[in-house]
Amino acid sequence: GAIASLAMAMYAMIAAYTKDTGFFTPLYHIASLVTDDNDMMKSMMADQQGGDAFTFLAGPAILGAMIHMMTGAMYGAIFGAIVSRLRLAFAVLSGIGVVYGFLVFVVSAYIALPLAAAIFDSGDPIKNMAEMAGWGTFIIEHLLYGLTLGVLVAAARIRSSATAPANAHVH
Image 1 (cartoon, rainbow, N blue to C red):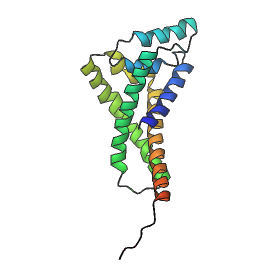
Image 2 (cartoon, rainbow, N blue to C red; image 1 turned 120 degrees about the vertical axis):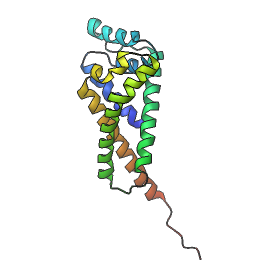
Image 3 (cartoon, rainbow, N blue to C red; image 1 turned 90 degrees about the vertical axis):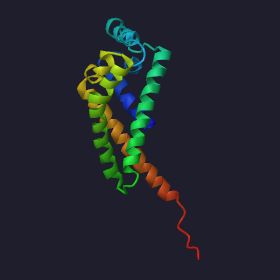
Image 4 (cartoon, rainbow, N blue to C red; image 1 turned 45 degrees about the vertical axis):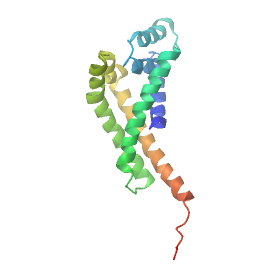
């Protein structure tokens, strides 16, 4: 789950860079769950007004990455529990991952983020994260997350079945 969240984060960061809102801004956006949104705004303004797309603030960047990876790991564990008993082909499991990514998007955008904003009193940056990131970008991030989860789980199964010892018959 944490690895899949890294793929998602890289997409978000590249999307932010192409939108001139700052490469590291998504990390500061996530960190605003427990901090104020000053770092996010500082990064956005540095890119939009000064052309500095790579404003790096170590503390908030690390905090944002940790929150994102922990959330990704949690959703990944849920995915693993759901598909653990299913014996599906690589492509099917990857497709289920994409569908799961979409479900995580729906839960995040409409339930988890507004709830987290209320619990942590972090306001609109968290409550409206999908809108602020851009709905299309936010959906694609989550589809990529799900696809990566599905591929990683399928690959792990292939690897474990290839290295598993043959069943020995003991009499």
